[in-house]
Image (cartoon, rainbow, N blue to C red; front, side, top):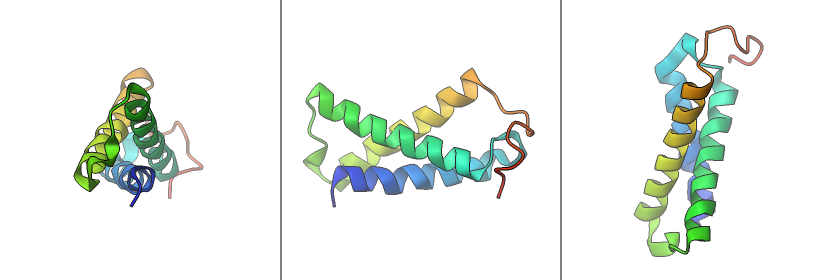
Length: 92
């Protein structure tokens, strides 16, 4: 499986976990899934751009994707903290 495909799976899973943990303080499931996905894909792209091979195995790809997804969600929460009513139409 390619690192990009692993990043998609791990990013969506990390977004789902983030939505489950923060419940009403977040921006909704779709926004959290998007943040996790974007963070994971950006981490894989960044690691490729730096010259480190993520093709070292599935564990390395999962680790890079998980760190990227958690970082993307964490940075967003620090920059623009949710109030529970930021995106009322997106909550599933």
